[in-house]
Length: 388
Ligand SMILES: Cc1cc2nc3c(=O)[nH]c(=O)nc-3n(C[C@H](O)[C@H](O)[C@H](O)COP(=O)(O)O)c2cc1C
Ligand SMILES: O=C(O)C(=O)c1ccccc1
Image 1 (tube, rainbow, N blue to C red):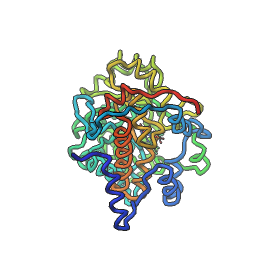
Image 2: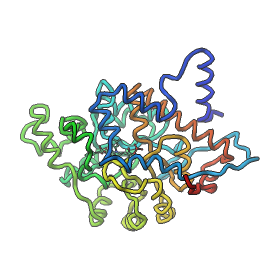
Image 3: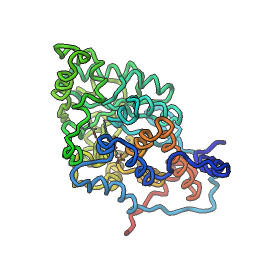
Image 4: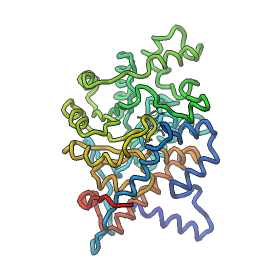
């Protein structure tokens, strides 16, 4: 039976033939490669974060404060990494987090389709951002049978929100991820110092420009007057959501609703009371607010508050052992952000798929060595806080 860890054998076997992996297998070397190769404005947008990026750094380094204890004399020849989510059986416990500029991360400007192809090739679901260079319908086609989730940036215009959600439903997405922490952009010195905000340059707005309701707000079509269309986008972008809006959001769709950006246990409880189907514990990779606690350190309390409701997690995941630690701390599934974007920028769909395969191989081999044949064993083993 094929196991995710077999990717390691493939790499060593290729090495015997003198063929090295096209991209590095670890996040740090991969990021260094991306730094050398990506256009500076795209690199800065992807790599950068809020303020002096202390929270962003802490997101990844905090994983070192958690440790796992191996168990021996357990038969782990076969590992099962599959999960159940909203009635779906997914082959792995990871997914691609929504990234609003995947579209401009490949030279052809179709990075969203390339990411979707990587998702389809690996069976790892993709969360598709509202901010994309290709309309959500085309991305859904590229996903094929692999589940996609539509990430909603809730516009101020209710009719536009309804239209985006209806389009996502019609295109076959399996859930709506409502991002709560980004109605306004956090203070990002790298982008500010270079005066660069891709959306205002007209990038990644295909879901708006293709939307009948958005088009009805314009005096002239985006094809004839792109600058005015961008200004209308900026004016309609970010609705401030409060708990009072949950009933309205719930009324828009029968798909599962996942609330992204919840880090406080009281917010998790409130979300569940208001009808959310899953909690997505994330601090947006430290891009929105600086000065915050590392996301992984907030996960255990959110999991405890959520009870049986699934908790998804991202922010700072850089390795297979980070994935396993987040699962040990109670996440149902773990989102991959910047690392897959670097793979995509360096080698398109294949590069992104390579990053995914490396993360899964490392997670799988860790489970093999540590005596955890299933994710239930990972969860039961847990992770413990340790001193540095
Ligand atoms: C370049 C970039 C664009 C992003 N765009 C979105 C987005 O459109 N919607 C969203 O909900 N989150 C967005 N995020 C946040 C990610 O979904 C995820 O929470 C974050 O990348 C996790 O942090 P990490 O990449 O450091 O692990 C973006 C992140 C990056 C790096
Ligand atoms: O770059 C981001 O993290 C992001 O998701 C975003 C999207 C729109 C406005 C501001 C930030």
